[in-house]
Image (tube, rainbow, N blue to C red):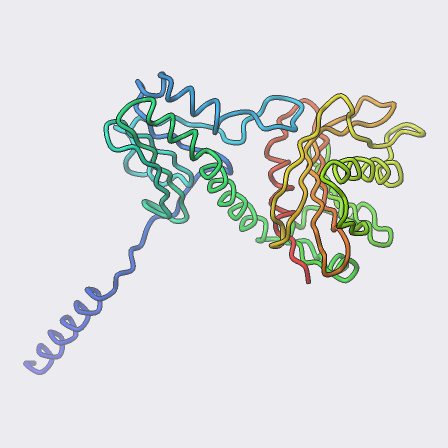
Length: 324
């Protein structure tokens, strides 16, 4: 009996030592819909110029959508109730007044996975200055994280993209709910049906031109997508096809895809001679090794409903591309 007690005591001591040396902290699973942002800020600040600065910057409408829709759905939470399960939301912007002006970025502070940005200042103006100075970094941090989360979710059931890999020499991941609507040589049209329309992805290549100016390339992008629309994307009536809405000024910018420079265009498409339109995002990925631009375009047809989430899904798919 004494031997058994001694052995038990030794086992407990060893276990206690192992637990003391184990620095792993287990955190609860985070929660929240994609692009839902919890803004932890006291009511008085939220109703002041600080709250207005948040709503007009991080909460501003996205460019390239037919209706005003913000990138993030903001949910204001007073500091006094930011506790318990409320702390488990995935995206958190915390604003604190009365301490040194700063902007800090945290990974998994209360839950996992989670991103928190803490913005502080002694006065309202100092806080606004921090928001203005760091707006791009804050938005990039949140967006990159949400893209990763969206990709994690649709990896649960993936489309078999081996034909795309074989033809285009790329890897790409998107949900199995998509279907192949059309394939012709190196042109692929993937589509999924939604209650009010369709979500679409186009993949193809064009010859690389390293001598183009930015303005010339922008013109080429629109000219190319219009010719592709005329050839591959017919409308509901004879002779109609998808083209670019001329009355809407496109956004042109740069963004990395597959660790390569890419040219990003956002605007509105329409169908010639038909009352159909919607948003599109178009990436020309600079694949110099293969002397080509890989073109990945997503467009949405969803009349009378919000389209932000569908466009974001397409961006997450395009960001999954890798050159094989």
